[in-house]
Length: 261
Image (cartoon, rainbow, N blue to C red; front, side):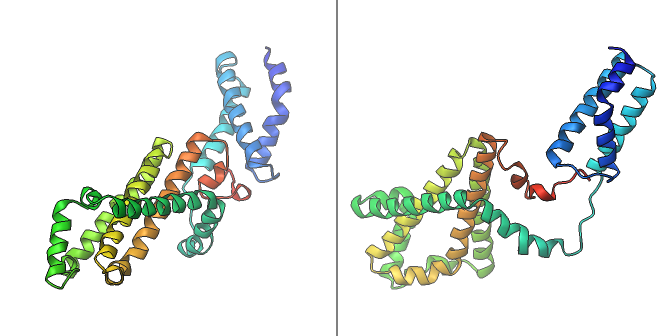
C-alpha cells in the first residue's frame, strides 16, 4: 500500500487517539485500548514499509506519548488508605458476593462433615488432630485443666505461632486459586473438617463451652480470614477461567474509573 493511501485510511483513528491523549475528547476505556493496539500495529507497519518517513515519526511520537502516560508513576491521594477501607474493600466484597458465599458454604459444610465423622468414627479425631495432641489433651482433662496446652507457651510465643499459622493458611487458600479453584476448595475442606472434629472432640467430653470460650476469642477472626482468603482464591480462579468477565473489577477498579492516564 502506498504511504498516502495508508495515511488516508487510518488518519481519523490517529486523530481520535491523539485528542484522547490530550484530553480534548473522552472515549470509552475499551475503545481507547483498542486504538492503542492499532497505533502500535500501524507503527510497526510504517517502520517496515515507510522507514524514515514523516508517518513513521508521527506514529512513533504518538505511541511514545501513550506509553509514557500509561506507565508513568501514579500519584496517590493522601487519604488513599482511608478510601481503600471505606470504599474499595467493601465494594470488592459486594461485587464478589457469590465467591464469598461459596467459600463460606464450603467451609461450613466440611465443618459439619468433620463433626459428623468424629461422632460416627472413633479414630477419626486422632487421624485429623494426631495422637500426640489427643493424648496430651486427654491427660490435661484428667488433671482438670483441659486448656492447659494453650497456657504452656508464653503469650508472645502463642501470639506469634497463631499469627504465622493463620498467615500460612490464608496464603495457601488464596494462592491455590491458581489451580482453577480446586486447591482453594481443598484448603477450605481440610480446615473445615479439622475445626468440626476438634469442636466435637471437646463436645464429647462435655467441654464444648469451655473450649469455645478459650479458642473462639481469636478463632472468630481466624476463621473469617480463612473464608475471605478462600473467596480471593475463587475470584482468581474465576478470572483465569473467564478472563474477559469483570476484568476491571478483578483489578480493583471500576470500568468507569479506568483511564489511560
